[in-house]
Image 1 (cartoon, rainbow, N blue to C red):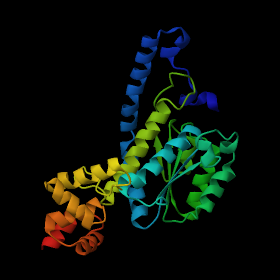
Image 2: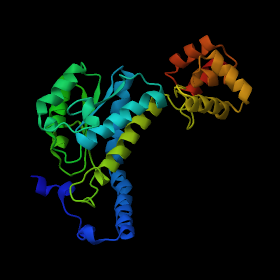
Image 3: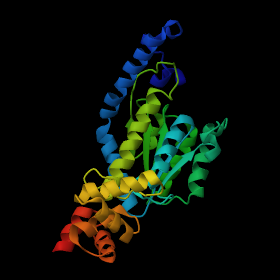
Image 4: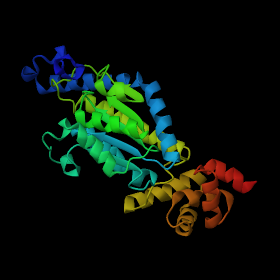
Length: 299
């Protein structure tokens, strides 16, 4: 029942929310938000399990698929669409599904989240396989759309991972890995776009970033697979090459030209003096890790 969920409980600190001055209200919101990182920290062991499972799926050629309704669905979609420019992934490698379809990102589609079969259908339309990892997001932990999706994922043999903001959530019992972040009651009762949404965003940041690091898409703390699709990103790519190699601007620009704008092979070319073709070959052999590729090239 909804009334038994932490995400639906009333926050004792905000019982007179409508009477608070703006400064007092903002301080209380900020203090409540500060609790979110600690709540996420409690679930790091489970998050680490999920990262390992997602990384394994991606290495096998599978996908990371987020699915949710409302705020939860939008958070998954946001993380998915940021992966191609940040990590050079293909648009279909990290996917976001939202109950009601893509139009629901902007305008709610009433009732879509209440139909478990739609979660299954959306995954069927993606051609879900056992190599994929499905992350179901539901602050309440009981959204039928997500439940239907996760149940289907398990039947297919895909990895089923859940993120909820209540303990002993319904979606936890049908997941291979259950992440339960208990943030406490919201400042505005039941408004899970607040602390619940923030905590889900933090976890999605961890899942995608840590998984991509595990795929060799980071060198040091540099995003070496960034796609220079606009002026800002092209400048960032150049600075990444310079930071990674200690070279000057002209050397970085020349290497990027030879490497078709890709920072990763450009870095390897500068570090080892190899050609673009050799850089691509060594990176493939090292599963994308620049450090390993550099050692192999210089042996």
